[in-house]
Amino acid sequence: MEQENNEVLFQNLLNKYKKQLEYGKAYYHKNKTNEEFITKNRNRSKQYYDNNIEKKREYYENNKNDIKLKNNYKYYLKLNKIELFKERHIEKYNRLVDIGYINNDD
Image (tube, rainbow, N blue to C red; front, side):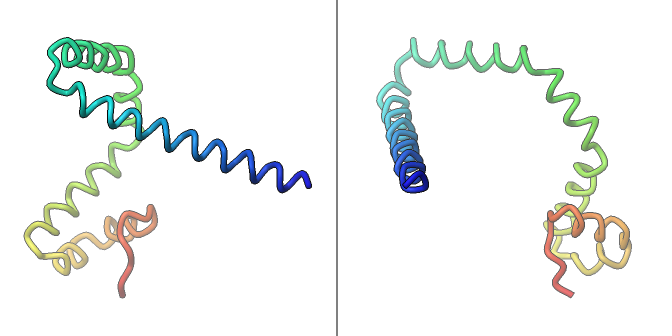
């Protein structure tokens, strides 16, 4: 009985969340050309950026090596030279597989 109630509550929350997303999308598309809406949205975004700049910096410092690995891999991917990347950077390739960024297809 309790499990059924939890399932019903979960479904209600999920439906409420979906309706909220739909409303937000409709509101945005209705007002995206409104100058007042654009200014408020820009100000809110700038305020969020200013308030959370330390969090972004901290995230980058914690993940600096992984970010560089990913960018290096993307460079070789863009040139279609993945095999060359695997040959030259074995440790980096293994690290990318370990963190789940790429699948090991060997």
